[in-house]
Length: 266
Picture (cartoon, rainbow, N blue to C red):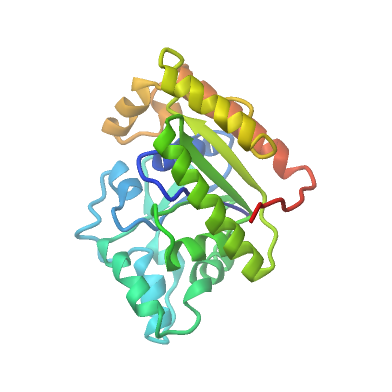
């Protein structure tokens, strides 16, 4: 089982869209795929028409079980998405309270890693959609994953968020002495605007070693797929956005087959 975490310390850069798009494409390839929502806002959960405000069973149950020194079966926290081969472990707003609890509890940094071990035989891929902030949830996601995917909107405020994300990544990985390959993915690229073109140039100049060579374009069909609650590839397989995510998936699968080395700047 491969675990990919999708994270950035800035919101609105395409994390949830990236998770759903890649998850849908993996399912199309016959890969048993889990989408894991750990953002208290629950955008990924809402995408599939589940309400984070009313769910009884969610990823929060895993953390509560550790806090209460109990056990819970992660299989009982899975929901159907309507797409064959694609399941969801949803989020609830209560996740926002975890940072306050974690400071006085042991073992909260490895909750997801330990839970996913129990799902190893059930899934080929797990994609974790993170909140846009450093805290116990992001620490869990980084500890649990084999690869980090960092979507970055091609505009200058998003580049500042990427700087913070790289500092966080460096700090966590050096503290834990773990190796983690990562891929920076330019998103929402609009070749008609100077801001997009200039931002992409800066990304290529600054992060060339870990930057995906292509980009995800602005595509209204991605928004329409979200409105329909369907992964983009199942909604319309031939849009520019879906084709770009297909190229990204090909690149990620190829990278996973190759040896890698940690290269995070302090």
